[in-house]
Image (tube, rainbow, N blue to C red; front, side, top):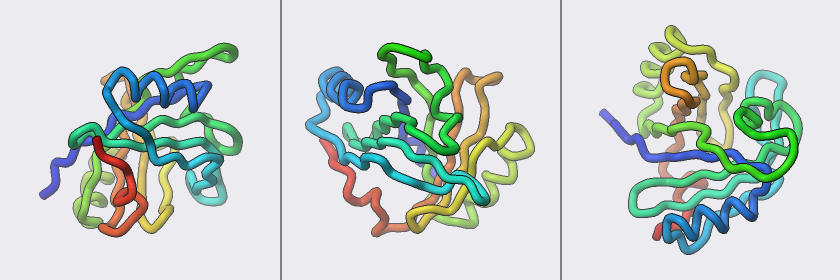
Length: 154
């Protein structure tokens, strides 16, 4: 059974500036950058965002700048104008798809599910836990050999 709570994710209005600030604050040497990434957010829906990923020890930091498409969940907490970086979600990774599916069913019974999809060889789902915890929760399942293996570690 996996209890891999390992991701702090931030949304921002300025991806490059947020990467610099978070790297400086947490002694991170750089990020895997995924500019203008298009990904599925549900049946017939897609979003485009800038993403950046890096580990500090075993904690993964994710930075997301929403750009277009079905990206409204990533705008939460951001101002209409000016710069901001805000904590957005806690991510939990499941190595086993059956375990992911079991936790997914339990979470769906408790929280709204604004986006969920299979993408990049894996699957993910965001739960709106803001009323309980003040942030979203993401569950995801990607196999060994996925894009996550290329994320730099510091």
